[in-house]
Image 1 (cartoon, rainbow, N blue to C red):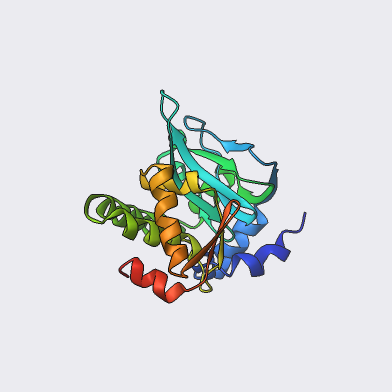
Image 2 (image 1 turned 90 degrees about the horizontal axis):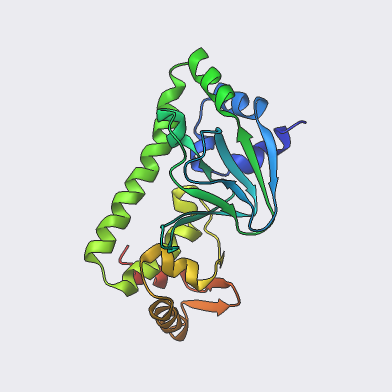
Length: 228
């Protein structure tokens, strides 16, 4: 299957667009398509490494569930987000669950193929390290916000992160397809608190709340609310 048709979409992402041309071509050459239905798991915590993924269509929820059944949602990722690199570095089982929010198409570069690419050209390890370090940077920011910032700022900031594709896209999205309970789970807030804070943003004309979605009406004022 010719996956070259996906290159322009992948190139809208910061990480892929800054890769050496040889690595871009190797990823596409060794990739295969994966199609998921709504609610289908790509992998679960504890599963063996299965390679590197990019979202092409739809969205994937990255989360973890405790023994008591409480879910912590880390992120909701869409085109052109890449993920799965942690297990590439350490060869250990998956750290979280990855589940399709709706019908979803992904590009998968299997683990053996990825290791083969990196063995043939070891300097490409740095490019994978940059992918992981970008996420580590965002994780530190989120931990800091959880400790220091009021809930209203955290809600605004997380919405910004999502519409900005976690730093991957140049053109921000206007609509976030996400239930409010998922946003609440990302921020360790109750659904009631999250709903009240979103309604306050709506009353200010910054967002519009719909069924399972949040539309950004005024990105500049949202950035001000997020203290960015």
